[in-house]
Amino acid sequence: MSKVCELTGKRPITGNNVSHSNRKTKRRFLPNLQKKRFFIPELGKWITLKVSTSALRNINKLGVYAYVKKMQKKGADLGGLKL
Figure 1: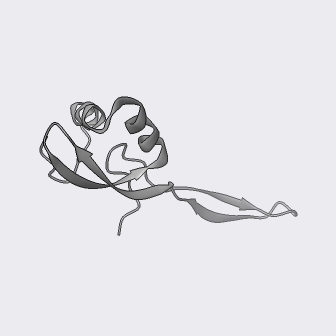
Figure 2: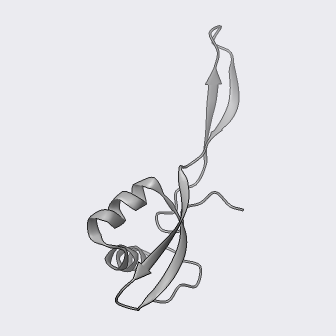
């Protein structure tokens, strides 16, 4: 299961764990992803998306239909979702 937001495209990034003695070892910073069902009243159907919490905040602000349309215009691949 990939750790990529379906709307924003956020994915894991790499960095370093830095110890008290300043030794550095590689680590991954994972995005905060949530699997969420949304009802789109314009289409009258439910969709399930794996989205980051920042995308959830934007969905709450704009509405799911408007935000998905905006991200499709930007070129986000929504896994074959047609709106």
